[in-house]
Length: 194
Image 1 (cartoon, rainbow, N blue to C red):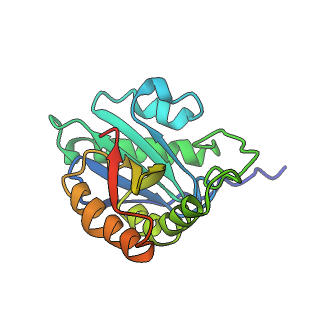
Image 2 (cartoon, rainbow, N blue to C red; image 1 turned 60 degrees about the vertical axis):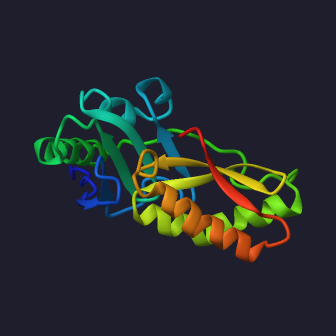
């Protein structure tokens, strides 16, 4: 009888602007494109067995999963060369076993809500089309939180959370783009919960 072949998993590591985060990139999609899952602590991992397992490593402070990568944020008292191969091997073994990193079933698009105002729909569209791809390259995500009185609030996830350059990205990148594309509506962009 023929034995089923395990899916070959290739995983490489990629640095990003946050020195405490490291991006582990797989050769296939881990979650549906456009979705991201942020786990700031072990209590939040109910739908991700992989994130839960990664929190078993004492140095792991945060786990973020999107498209084809997992971003792990470590504590400051440990250096990446001490743990990066252990974490990479654990993620690789997990994926080679055919397990899903996130176990969630979505019945609607989490990005768009039919009750959103036209301005909010435009803001979300700009964030999804222009910001998400660039920020994912650095192992993170910036997600729409709210819009009121000209102020867009966003959540910083993955490597963006706690990153020294996130304020520059927020003001020089996202705020400039949104105020230029929606000058009558958007006046400022702020990060929520950092």
